[in-house]
Image (cartoon, rainbow, N blue to C red; front, side, top):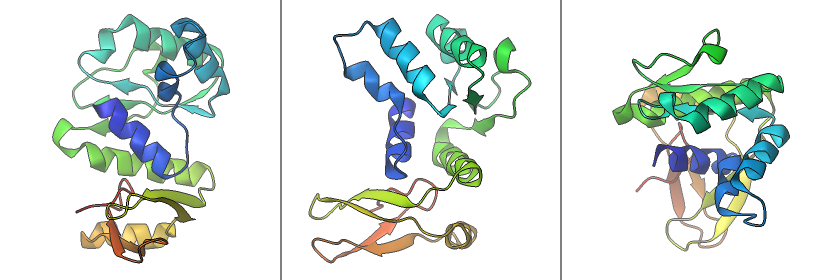
Length: 172
């Protein structure tokens, strides 16, 4: 569930999550899909939870990313010690009940490293997907500090859509 939420948040800012490869390209073995995903990534975001920290797959992916000298931004559940290969990194720490806050910090960090111009939104009213310019970082920060939502209009049905400024996902 946490990985799916991370993938949806990355999708919203037009960053592809290679975890989606797990369900695609079945012609390749899982090992090949993982190697391909890590090699093709600009950044690897290991999701480290109580269960994940001892997972051989998670640790192998981290080892591969570290060996390829990939940028790694760990997303770590509070109280969990980082695996040895990435213990020197500054993680984004999350609590299960405030996961969206950590996703907001992650997106903010990625925005500082790269230029994110576009936002993908699926309208909660008409179901259409649209692409719009992403709100300026200052506007996002202001909404976060005020505890308010970002606002946009659906290009198709013309209804107002309110977005969570942490995840850029529509809110009811």
